[in-house]
Image 1 (tube, helix red, strand yellow):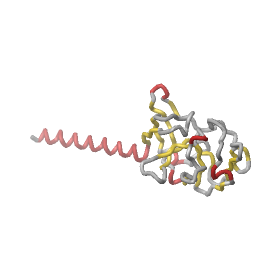
Image 2 (cartoon, one colour; image 1 turned 60 degrees about the vertical axis):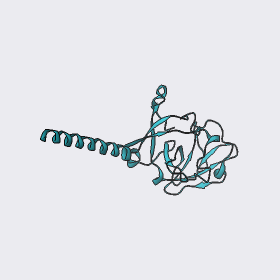
Image 3 (cartoon, helix red, strand yellow; image 1 turned 90 degrees about the horizontal axis):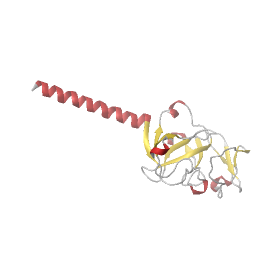
Image 4 (cartoon, helix red, strand yellow; image 1 turned 30 degrees about the vertical axis):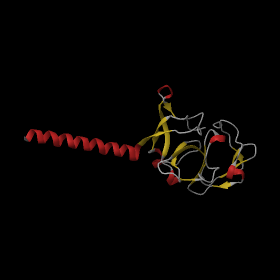
Length: 180
């Protein structure tokens, strides 16, 4: 009887440790996220499964062109995946030709699938506060992003993490493209 009790206790402690470790990893290290929609094409596609790195931004701030994950403010358990374009303290403006300007300088980038047709709120200069980021989807004409008032500017504390690794579909496994 003592042996059975000992094994049950040992197994229970083991399962509890596994559950605690799993919770820790999901809450503080990384989480799986599925892409829904075409707003990040050609970088990410509908149905891609990603691992989101939740550690990196504990040590440094997001960089321009990072692909970040944040909650959509109007729907519970809905997360958006977008690319950081404007950083805190900068001014962002998009002209009628779809050119993006940061502090009055043309932004050299090649992530947009096509030229922006509707600059939305960014048709006028937008100043980013000390904790605000301007984000765009790579599929600029099929994306709800910082140009849209329903998304708006993203506060630093809203950012869950950085899209890190595509784990599905299997033929596209690899790291998500960040940087210039």
